[in-house]
Amino acid sequence: MNKRTNTRAMVECALMIALGTVLAQIKIWQMPYGGSVTLVSSLPFILVSYRHGVKWGLLCGLTNGILQMMTGWYAPPAGTVVAIVACILLDYLLAFSCLGLAAGISKPVKNRTAGVFVGVSCVMIMRFLCSFLSGALLWGSYQSYYEWAEGMSVWLYSFVYNSSYMLPELIITAIAACLVVSAAPNLFEKQ
Image (cartoon, rainbow, N blue to C red; front, side, top):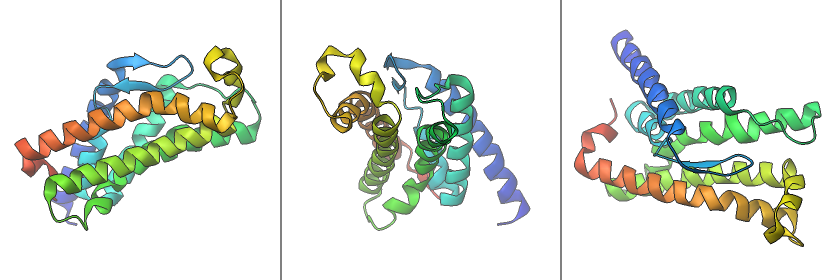
């Protein structure tokens, strides 16, 4: 990668981080104990993955995770060092970094739109899995605040709670990505 290309990638990453941060503030709805459906706030980081590769996508997603943590940190109920580190890793760093894997996941798919759909869906499922694990391992004590969760296992509670916002987020992001790749395929081209 030459200096000009590297500079372009850095500038695009900075712009996408800014765009993703703004889009994350536009919440369609927010869950009471963390998590929300946003206006495609994951899409800018996925775009970076397609335009500049997985390495840049991971770095951009990681930076977004740090910013998300700084703007909306929820400390886990068990305030131990292990719980805090696990929360940082699962809820922020890993969850948002995985968005950068979209281009690598979709490579084997020949049809561009189908590939984008597969890539976006897979990374959003990975993000859900991070939230699901965090919910079961760290946030399970919040289950008692919901009548509907009475008698549920902590794993089922975490699945239901996190699915309630991550599934709509996945659907909205996948549809938006497919619309964008159909209308402006050059946005998903490797630079």
